[in-house]
Image 1 (tube, rainbow, N blue to C red):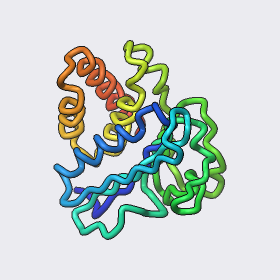
Image 2: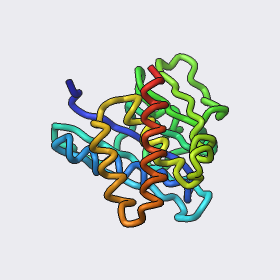
Image 3: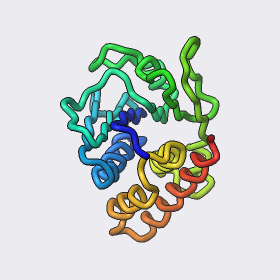
Image 4: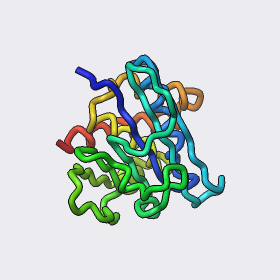
Length: 191
């Protein structure tokens, strides 16, 4: 049974694909929920600079793309853990609701989670993408981890979006499907 609404942040640095992962999630969510929004926040529009997006999906009307608290933060870069989100005037780690989920790279600092009721899933996203010979597929691994860990979006819908995005290049599609499936497997083992 699904909840009324979900809010997710995908955060990384320019060039990591956090915005692409968020967009793929929003497109899959739009097929499963009545409403879905995608709000990219590209601070300086450059590689290696902070980039994040908020994805919101619900069966109820979404009145704003912005939200100050989210159920899940997928933080692909340690650099983003302590960054200050100018849009809502908060540290990203403080934007996770109590009872929420933090998905992040293994070995990265979790920041100050004292007093917070947050589940943390550490992922070897970079190592996983290198192991499957897809160094540019870290974002797709993280998308899979989110889908596998939360089970909010049917796996098939997210996979269809990956296929649609990368389907014109068979070798790229094969690598990204493998990255997605490996992420789903990792996410499924998280709880």
